[in-house]
Image (cartoon, rainbow, N blue to C red; front, side):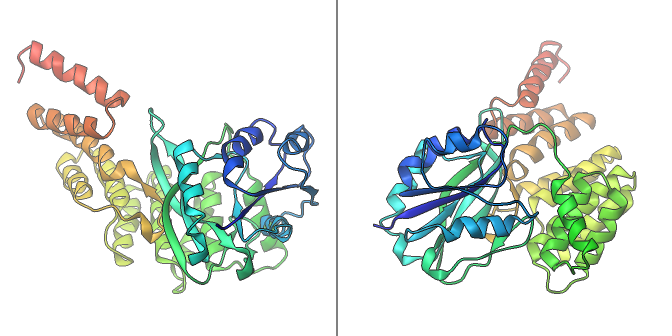
Amino acid sequence: MAEISLCMIVKDEEKVLARCLESIKDAVDEIIIVDTGSTDSTKSIALKYTQKVYDFKWIDDFSAARNYSFSKAEKDYIMWLDADDVITIKNKEKLIELKSKMKNFDTIMMLYNTAFDENGNAVFSYYRERIVSRLSAPCWKGRVHEVIECTGKTLYSDIAINHQSIKETYSNRNLKIYEKQIDEGKILQPRDMFYYGRELYYNKQYERSVEVLLSFLRNKYAWIENKIEACKILSYCYAETKNTEKALTILFQSFIYDSPRAEICCIIGSLFMEKEEYRNAIYWFETALNIPQNIEKGAFTNFDAYGYLPSIQLCVCYDKLGNHTKAEEYNTKAGTYRPNSPAYLQNKKYFRSLHNNQTF
């Protein structure tokens, strides 16, 4: 059976670190914590779970810190987590079972769930390289939004890690790291250009985000999934600056890179709803419902876009057109995906009142 070293980098994570380590401790064989400058009780909490706690001077480089943590690993495989990640009991059991088969693979990809509905079910997810063979000499690259360039045989598992952040604001830390690189004269690689553009959007620098992401799209070596995501972010930037036509145009451009994604179709539908062009919106939401979900492409996947979201929006569109019967049908369909959704339940009351008033 393979053994796993869990390697983490942390700073001021006293509110979440114990939650993370408590969830994973029984599934790993070694825990390594690298602290990058905590001023709270993070290190003392870490020491309750492992004696392998190290200090690393923060140099605005996540890869440097993660590579240092990996250098301390002694087991067959290395796993990484962030302090605000947790693994459920069910997924932990799957991971323990996987350890007996792990030696057949060099890399284990796991789902990373980052958003959840009212019942705690994942609605946004994507694959990350989560466990790698130590003998393959894994190396993190990128100062921010770092990644391991994996080689060898890869397993796409159905095991998921839940990212459960308690932070209420989005900091400009990542943006500053990118801008520091630029000030140093560093040329950003395509992947970094994408994430830099996304950070600019998150920090509400919409015009600069548009400039960077359009430049990124012109790079023929950029990953298709990032190009599609860039089109989505560009549409948000254009929408924020009240340029609906450009928002729609860039979303249509995403179809050049690959077959339409339900996420894109839903955004197009929403833009037509804002224009009160409900029949056009209906076309795109119904298209979204007919697109199969394929998370193994590595894309950022909004599960709601493949069922609940287009259904609830179709309910609104048909209601606006006066077709209450069709609207109720789609609300019922939305309820099959998320039966406790506030929007679905509110619509249900609305249609009940229509029935009581015999307006159908």
